[in-house]
Image (cartoon, rainbow, N blue to C red; front, side, top):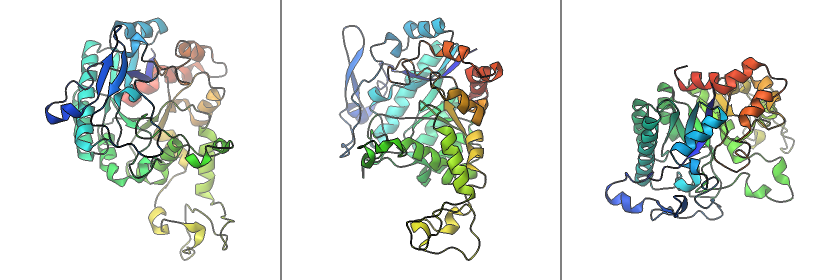
Length: 393
């Protein structure tokens, strides 16, 4: 069995179920003579954030008939030998972000989820639903995942980062403490959170400061910063049963990132830019040794001293999962380092961006990959998804 854990879908009636005054503010799709969505209008769009660069609608893959629910989509997966698919929104066309006014965003998410529920009912043995939620409305998001869980959805779709209106740089998910009750409820419902870039509101991979002279080569991406915040904020200490899936980002970054975090949390690097040469960060602080100028720290020691009770690698091997890019040269090494249990098969169908260009070959590439045990390949194909999503085997 093969379960594809990163595919995109665009129901034409995504926002047809928004009622009342909000209906006039919802996005509207324009459709050409062949039935393809070729544009969108959004009367209720949030005010643009200066410096941000959202992608235009409808986005990559919208000229594939399989972007839309129906037989063409099922045909692709049958031809590839893929038995089931977890569907995520076509985020560019959805015009959805955490910058939309909360009532409208909550209505948009629920209308989309109703469309996905129709697709799940039409193909119950094939389609796995991931519910869209508006995190700017925490109570509404909790109510939405409770509804989704009761209706058979198995996961939750969220942005990798938290865009804000105050500046063009997204903020990290772990740093938004108001979201923690939502995360706690997701853990209670055993619904993993699929972290995917939502291409509206903000569209930055690295901070703009680094977008010249090749400096982005060593600068962390916003998505990586947000991923690490789930560990360093103490979120996964407080909610140890919480599970995140970091999608469509490759795997080569994992080992160097985890090894750097483990080393920094165990033995703090020295801050040579500060006159007192104190450490920038401590995992454990000896009583009486903390000084206010140490490392130009913004958070008091007694706040973060109790966090990260285990090495960062523990959280990566327990709470964090990753969809694969089968063509990536370091894929097998990443699996060997972190363990096959943390990886999920994905094609990114029907996108033509870097993550989706190999969609016609992903099954074959994994099958023919040298140096990886067959047991590990079987875990990646379906075993991990069955366990993580609570599916019948």
